[in-house]
Amino acid sequence: QKYTFPADFWWGTAASATQTEGAAFEGGKGPNIWDHWYEQEPNRFFDGVNATVASDFYYRYEEDIALMKELGHNSFRISISWSRLFPEGQGEMNPTAIDFYNRVIDELIAADIEPFVNLYHFDMPLALQNIGGWESRAVVTAYTEYAKTCFSLFGDRVSKWFTHNEPIVPVEGGYLYDFHYPNVVDFKRAVQVAYHSILSSALAIQAYKETEQTGEIGIILNLTPSYPRSQNAGDVKAAQVADVLFNRSFLDPSVLGTFPAELVDLLEQQGALPEVVQGDLELIAKNTVDLLGINYYQPRRIKVKEHLPHPDAPFMPEHLFDYYEMPGRKMNPYRGWEIYEKGIYDILTNLRENYGNIKCFVSENGMGVEGEERYRDEDGSVQDDYRIDFIASHLQWMHRALEEGSNVKGYHLWTFMDNWSWSNAYKNRYGFVGLDLATQKRTVKKSGHWFKQLIEEQGFT
Ligand code: BGP
Image (tube, rainbow, N blue to C red; front, side):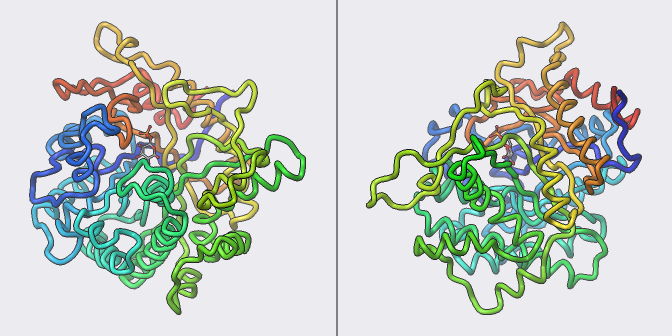
């Protein structure tokens, strides 16, 4: 069977500033929480490798964009580093950063690659974290100013904007499960952070609409379909709770403008309702997204809670459900994530049926693999047939959703080139292009060539 996609489908990849730019202490950039955390605890998560150089995109963007063009991509997501533009997060702007992002955007446009620009990808400026990060309303205000600045600096050329990438991840990482700075474990504070992220997104959308620019603005969410172990009432209920907490908490306000009633009830029961200022909820209701980015890696497998937590234990989401391993599941052994291709179809079907078939695209999907150098051929090109299979099998399900009327407009792989990652540095490689860390040499993998052909043929068999 041939899987054919629309001629104007967006094909490309996604990346983020911290993970690619390098030049972490150059060009007038101020420190963000990652720069700071590395200095504090150099060996905690990163194999001792920080993001100071990363894949050197700051200096090599021309070469990288040329390669992207050669590989036929028509779009690319970058993020702007907030602390590069505003070294203190607010106040004085860094002219070198304006120049850098202007050059990147112009280079992409000259290569016929549409820039998709994301404003926040996990990289809180340290100066703002020091006054409370997303817990602080002042930071929401600073973010809105930063967003407005980006629209006015780059909005004449950028017409796809995103307010956040995976805003639930800094909540989980920073305030629940201890894998992002500031390593707090506190459900109530996590809820405040989540609420302020949603509010900031609505404020940025409002600001964008006020510019009268004609592009689209959205948010990028990591959606994890939540499947119950069985159809027993307990399992089904547990899976719904996980869905409300981890998906609908952001999806509903972003697309529908409302918070799920089940979420509000749950937070009330836990005494964890966030501080809401009068007028916020109207603002969130009015400023929903034009476009939704979906990052899909893995589902959640949920069963009813079997052993109740100690009554005095501080509340955590896992008090309401348990995870289980689905027998026979397919795994990516390197990242420890389940591979379940149909999840992408289930997400798109859910959006079509329950979210007004919101315009969307797959903004991240990908397979991180450790030790890829062993698959290199004599020219140094990684023969990553496993990645081709991974992408093709997800695209098949996406194609089926499209045929059934899904409003899905494109597919971006995570990521263009092997890059630095938050908790495991360069351990797992994701790119269409391999990176030799010692020399910064870029070599296209087999999947990169395969994807080029797919784009040329508007599909694959
Ligand atoms: C997403 C993030 C990316 C990227 C990716 C892969 O959650 O948006 O920044 O890192 O996951 O995850 P990891 O690098 O942790 O394997």
